[in-house]
Amino acid sequence: KQEVTQIPAALSVPEGENLVLNCSFTDSAIYNLQWFRQDPGKGLTSLLLIQSSQREQTSGRLNASLDKSSGRSTLYIAASQPGDSATYLCAVKPTNAGGTSYGKLTFGQGTILTVHP
Amino acid sequence: EPEVTQTPSHQVTQMGQEVILRCVPISNHLYFYWYRQILGQKVEFLVSFYNNEISEKSEIFDDQFSVERPDGSNFTLKIRSTKLEDSAMYFCASIPVEGSVIAGELFFGEGSRLTVL
Figure 1: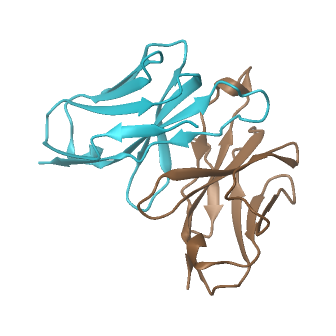
Figure 2: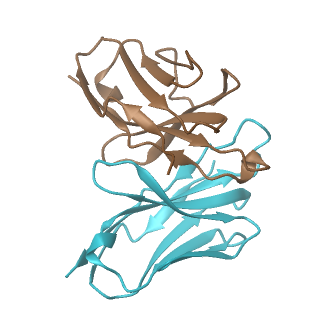
Figure 3: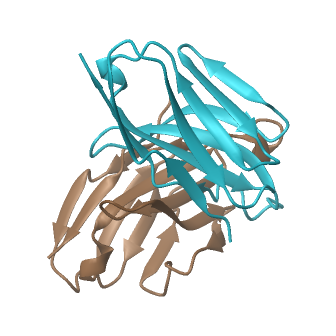
């Protein structure tokens, strides 16, 4: 059974700092990995999607990397801002997606990020 | 930008009552999902739905739960007789058709918070 773990559970940094959030998964047979942002009491906003054949994806100040063989992904946030404060979730989709597992994501518990001015 | 919409945003109900949560997926999406998040816990997969039938469900999705797409646009989750432990945020999600559906990223709605008293 796939298990997804995120470290650290919480992180508090001053504005402007570069930071790294970590995600690890136990079963490397994944099809893709998706990073989400969740604001308190709100829905999930997709940040980046990395296919298993890719090593990294970038969007603005965000860069996500994937090392499938070691079961790890990192989300790098450059020049953090108070508006980045949120919970960041990673989720993996299994490889065996033959028509019945599309979208069945396994989520980590999230990293709560606080960026203070 | 197209989005998944969910209603109600918050519902309070008495234990034993029936609840229906509604979702309007993005129009050209084919696969629909319900996930839930109990306060402080991970986001969990409940059920996936394709071509008007359930394609996969988790052990959480017991006989008290049902899904349907009554009119070609709405996608509903019904809980027949709510229990205290059903209190959670329920998220609807859908996945686009982009060549291979497997490659698509999930788009989530804002969620419906269910409180069972």
